[in-house]
Amino acid sequence: FSENARHLQKTLIAFLSRRSEVDPSCAYARYFYLGQWLRDNQLEIERLFQQSSDSHNNTDTGLDDDEDRMVASPSVQLLHQAELTKEFIMNLMKPMPPSVIDPLASVLDDKRAILVTRYLASSRALNKSFDMYLQKLLRVLNE
Image 1: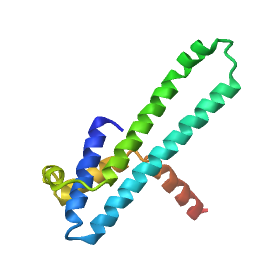
Image 2: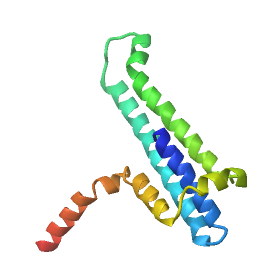
Image 3: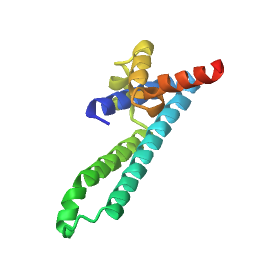
């Protein structure tokens, strides 16, 4: 996630935390989003491990170990970034003090929270390919 997305995530979690005092469904929404982000991040880590092992097993570059590490460094950097994201999400799961929640949550109202949620969901795989799935479903229904 980018720094902007992280800030939006933290703001949304603060908003839901504050709202959960009045509306219990917001507490469930908070944990749902945290779970989804953690799951997406874990899938990304697994994908990076799979790509790393596939490229290492399938290609014999003829390079020595130092050169191999330099070739693999982009995936190592991506893996490190994914681990940092995991740590960020795990920290969001911890209860936030009111001194942190109030300034963040005051930025959002219900309409803005919906927009933030839509923006954060726009990077999910289903959302990206929803039109394709819908077209396939319509084709099957029309047959």
